[in-house]
Image 1: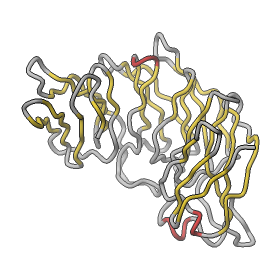
Image 2: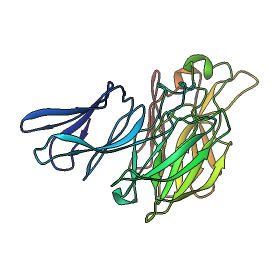
Image 3: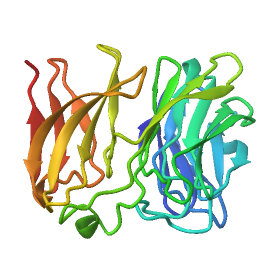
Length: 279
């Protein structure tokens, strides 16, 4: 669910339904033969959704009913990669450039791409491949901050229990893409294999220019240590790590991390909440 820019609430259903509430109740439009496994983003134009085949904008018509303004096909791939919950894009649309552009990650082979499109027309403005061939997937939304998109690699988080236990972990990878706010064209700023994020919905903060995430390293000794981690937005260099805890109980399993006004980090795990207090 997401509130409309003016009134009402937009919603999506897994079997390709997009709807909006209003004075006359809920009204819907459907994408036949497509499913929706992610959330939605709402702008003044309407709801941006990504289905199993396309990125689309659904707007209100003159009577307030939803209608598809445009839809743009993307490379949905041929399989559900390990680390994904469905076979297709694993990202909710991310809005940037003051609503002028929208970005997702596709499910292409051999490498996943970060895709940017014009939010008014759906025209693709750029496509940048990221991470190693045959080892790229993400199940979490892109971060947009200061004209930069951040994407993390979740490939290998399947099955969750064995993929991150006994010293095992997932495929490393994080990358930053610079997007021109006028044209929507983009280029890769950096890509690093020094960060391994099994499944966190990471965050970024302009205060100090950091990506705040939750990582797990591989261990030949079989140790399962989970860490709060800060990554430099400009360079991709790991600035700091702090141990969150040991063992499967500290696995966040697709939960997000949250930054409080005081600078504390909160992350939900399988058996509770872990908190990193600011100094």
